[in-house]
Length: 437
Ligand code: ADP
Ligand code: MG
Image (cartoon, rainbow, N blue to C red; front, side, top):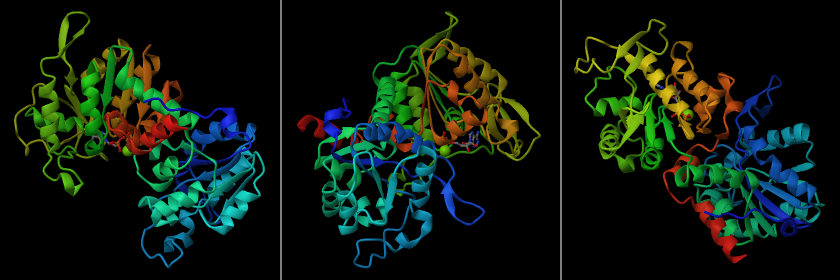
């Protein structure tokens, strides 16, 4: 997918609406006021916005925040949750004023005469931040009037919200169809990194897949398994793979049926088994002579009665394969030492490593070793290293290794959908606009 970033002449002295993802976590300070708890998403848009300021664009920023309820509109087009300060972008405006020194004004609406007046008096380099787009139920419903009113505020549209690009919302797709539309620099960079994984990874390409939410990850995992040379499975999702091969998982975490009722007949143990059997005949070579299967799951696990327990034991999964649910009421909470050795050895040989999902319950010191070993192996590998996922990044930060990765994707679901091979609606809208403008 070729997405165009704006040229200077496309934005100079123009009114530019930038759709950003300022959906940051907030917390209450001692005075009881909401403030920004983590500014990662604000930083992600910083380059594009400062570039626009430098080149004298008049800037309108638009974002959603949280999930205000779509109901109870009183004729204003806005939800009643608009009065609730927990959904206001005011703390974001304060943050960027204080830390980025942006000349920004928050307006309490997204469309209408008040906004039009504010936009009309914008000077080059100045910024208006619109209030939460989701105060208008029309945003999520992608209603034409809302997209048109937003588009009427600007001459040029920029999408700098990759993490929201899987959503067909008015500010994501609607506006992009009505104005010359460009990719923000951060979005373009993210798409380039993720595309490279599925089109031309430096080989060997190793995928490390863990975490808990198999329902969200399975599409990406299926697609990546086709492209990758090796898939190393760990974390809670490894239990699906073990179970599919008849290996008892006792009281381990297992997400086997979807939360989404529309796919109620899917079973993720079966799907894991299908991924293994689909790649059953593909082999990789370790040290030039040991043939290994392409899809590799743990050969041992660190187990305990619960994640809170510090009484742990290592279970050899190559032997403990009988179905004896009662004699070991144990949960597998991390990959074991032999698995760590195998996985980290392979990572050393990689050209590219993509890691999503912790190898164990890294929040507890007793079960962090697997994730820490993967993080360290990636930090020291010669491979191009890309990681994604909220908890994966949190784990990397916890181990102080986040800055040792070549690329961190904070885009969550959007990144996983992209890696599954799906066309994200907002990127499709950008690509179409780029062709016609
Ligand atoms: P990400 O946010 O990186 O995509 P997920 O949200 O899917 O990752 O999974 C992260 C969660 O998975 C963490 O809270 C971690 O404790 C949990 N987890 C990892 N391994 C296991 C396991 N073996 N059993 C239970 N939970 C696990
Ligand atoms: Mg998570």
